[in-house]
Image 1 (cartoon, rainbow, N blue to C red):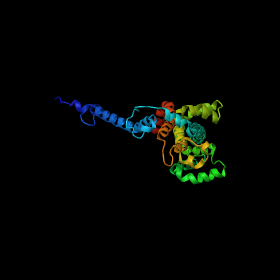
Image 2: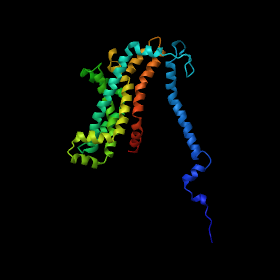
Image 3: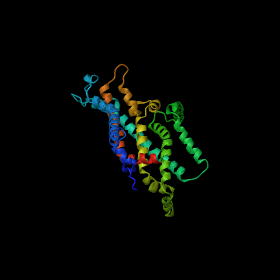
Image 4: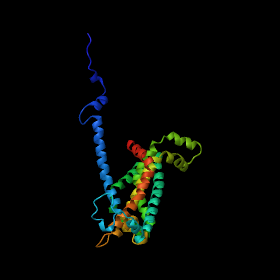
Length: 296
């Protein structure tokens, strides 16, 4: 006696999921995801595109502009933004502070993360969790202690003092992320290097750092963006206009009674360009770095 078998019941569930009707079919689900992605992309890029559009609008018709493409585009706003209030100097100040913050933070965090990942010493985990606990403290609560500390060190109103504060605020997260990557590198590679007479610095620079390039690219991008866009600390610590960074300089376009909207939007676009460039340059390593970090 031959018992018939319903072949549809023996098929894998993944095969049936793509052919079944309704919302949970693969094709419809992919379409839904695509629609959601387009909506989220529009919500994210819409304000940015509108800001770029307003930066090319003449001052006379700027507030009444409702179209994305300007009818009478002009670059006068950019010329005025760059030449007004020494904006070029502020741009250079932000560039110096952001690059210095990235370099110093990555170097110190790499050394600390290497020690946490490779060495055993007393109170290692306690010290590491103290670093992590500092992430729970909002930076605004530290403004007064930071101000008093910079005053004692005679570093108020200086780019060096601002850089040191940015380094201190970015160190805990950078150490936390880099430690996970360093621990994932097999110890056999390090032992092979040390058998050839390599010291700790050479192991870190010639082995650990190249293998952790995605992680270094990710943290560098995050650090640069945080230092470039930071406003409250820079506003509190910097008093002279010659040391202003871009976020503080943008506030100069907002007057007591009037706002120069055209140059303000143009300056905002200029201030956005370096962050976009850094993201595009590190995009190759950013994807792999974020995915590996999520797995770990």
